[in-house]
Amino acid sequence: MTPRPAPPPPGTAWADLLRALAPDPPPPAWRRGSALAASGAVTGLKVLPGEATAHIRDHHGPTTTSLLWPPARQQDWQRAAEALAAQPVFRDALLAGLLPVETARVCELLGWPALPRRFDDIACVCSCPAWQDPCPHAAALLLALADQVERDPFTVAAWRGCTREDLLERVGRAAHTHHPAPQAPADDPAAFWAAPALPDTPPLPAAPAHSWAPPPAAAGQDLAAALAPLYTRLAGPPPDPDHPDHAPPAD
View 1 (cartoon, rainbow, N blue to C red):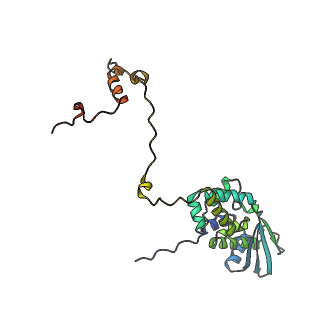
View 2 (cartoon, rainbow, N blue to C red):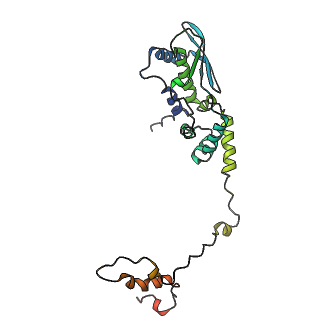
View 3 (spheres, rainbow, N blue to C red):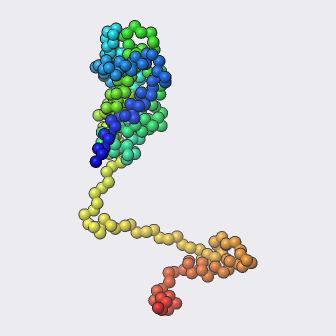
């Protein structure tokens, strides 16, 4: 039996969005940054509201590099949590400890991005003397951040100003407030299957054949007059099954 392939990491789609911020084709600084990230030169990565920072070592020595991006407002996160709690698919995924990449679309619809739309939206700060913008260390940090997001997509929320615990608490509170759990079924089976009475049917006009729109004439016949008995019968009381006119046909 062929073994099933391992599922992708939980934040693969989020990480792809971050990696897509790199220029195409990548300039030399980005290629050097990619090599630094792949070699494990990025250490001590920390993600705080509005800032991702790490230490990066290359042949020139160690540097301290930061990627700055303003966090979202707390009221924006609250609106996002309420919107996510209103959708069962998103709500169940979040309460199960997942962060669907569709959350980015929800944030966009609410008027703020969950991730930068382009790399120029990020402010790069580095202790190296390089003049490129971004320098290779900033490029390496972005790729290392994408690797961290791939393992834990809630890193995106932390960088944007909302921790995993805070987001899950907001979603859970909104789900409990606006979407309470359904009540348990009644203990009495008859009460469980009981249905409310149907509303009364509206009264029909006394002369339906004359008040309803007549059908178009065909072959010179007055169809309204021909169908009047049928309309009258339909508008009258239900037939009596015991009446001789309604007896079932003989075999």
